[in-house]
Amino acid sequence: MKYTEPGRSNQNHAAEREIGELKKRWRRRMFKKRCPRRVWDFGLVYEGEILSRLSRGRDGCTGMEEITGQTTDISDWLDFEFYDTVWVLNRTSMKNGHSG
Image 1 (cartoon, one colour):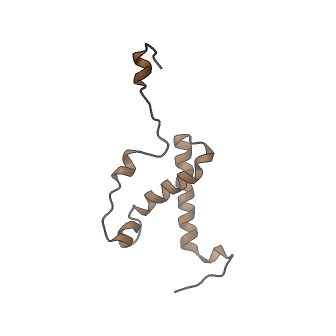
Image 2 (spheres, rainbow, N blue to C red):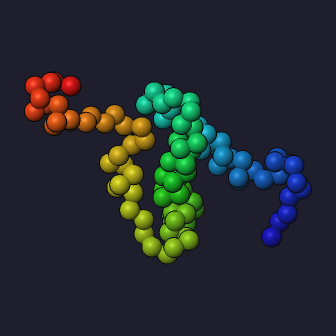
Image 3 (spheres, rainbow, N blue to C red):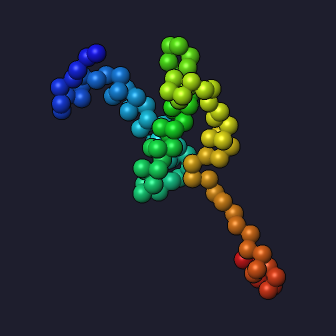
């Protein structure tokens, strides 16, 4: 086990690289989806959840698979993206003759 000094972020290259990847993925999604800046914390959690379910290591296992021992299913994360547009049909106003 290796130790790093407090306040010396340059000593933990692997963690810094992953944080940089997480930020890059969030910025890309934020611009693609036109998200407001105020949802940044939800966006980082979303991207982190996806990254933990992707096989990115040398051994071909996902982070979640290493922790739980079970193969992860990412289909739910791909069906519904972060900050998707949702349309709501208001049946009550349609019965009253309104279109909205």
